[in-house]
Image (cartoon, one colour):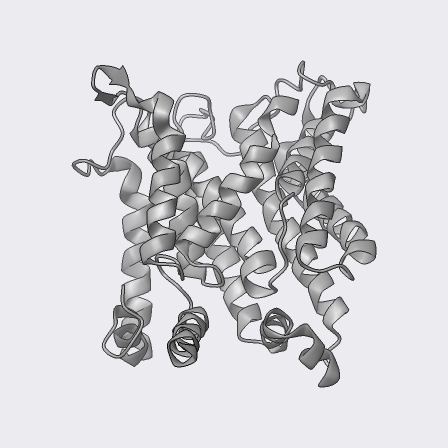
Length: 358
């Protein structure tokens, strides 16, 4: 997708506002109907299509949250899986009968508690560490993810690999009194995930256009200059960490509610690296790019199930293919598949500087 004059993005912004709203409604209707649409070469055959779509939905939600931290505020976070895990474990501790707390809450009642707990954890992590920059901040966040993983493995309350079972599903009933969110049909989970994604998109979009979004851009571009102009950079970086953590917790809560079981093996470090790769590949700093990147990293491994290459199962080589795709994207589209205008222009300016320097 070109980002210059006449690109799809430019034509979109030239449309009248009513036409854009109609297009957005039609797009939303299409995605809500997607579980029942058989798209040639797209629909996976080895796994349930609705289950694949739900997996895509919580990866997209994670990518949107990490995009706030990395793409908007420019903070390199390698431990984002820690917030995902905290959201899932908060739900498990409050709702699972295996929990020592003995609360047995409903899934819905755990959602606001999980969001608050994870937001506070984001603030507690960011308060002493956000004065660091670059690689130093990345190392600290990496340590945070490892602390969560080790605690989940070693702390008896979190039950290690035994995990938590019988986590309740989201509430709701079909006609006839049957549960809407069961263990067979994954479509309601996908619809729930899609609804949360839409709400998050509107929230992040409004923040992006506000004073907070402009402050994030200033911090990302030049933190010293932003401080010199009177921007309280530390406060806005803390906001980015807290908001990103809250979005990650929503993904963890949905994951726990759909799976019904979690343990320490669900939250390894590779998960964070994969989501970060999706944000970079899709287009760091751009909501549409984060959505596309998050969808691809979830969909591509599932699409390889059942495929054979030279008589061997292609699923075993899924991350090899993903790595090759990522390398090719970084060579031919270093700004990402759907870059933000600002990011694309920055890369063009740097290329011009290199040419002039030569």
